[in-house]
Length: 91
Image (cartoon, rainbow, N blue to C red; front, top):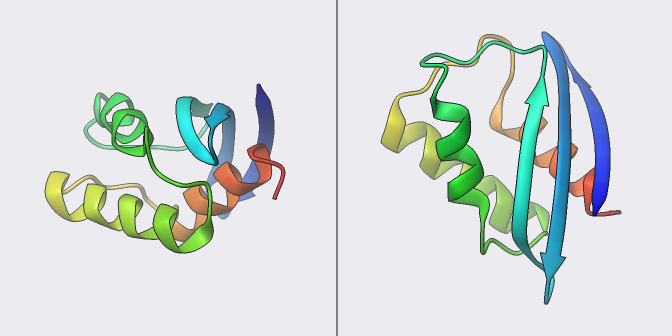
């Protein structure tokens, strides 16, 4: 299982993940960032399962998650999630 921490402008994003055929098979995200609504974090994790662990695919998945849920993450942007995930994937 890969693990990484990434310091975003407003909080640390911690990611644990497993890959299968270069795609995310399991992911757990935690940290000291803010996300509204708070239960959206579990939905983000679900949205990432099956996504290839490469920047373009991850960014598209996170941006879809933001637009479909209306989630708010003050000072944490989609690119920050992607960077944390890529680091956990060993990229």
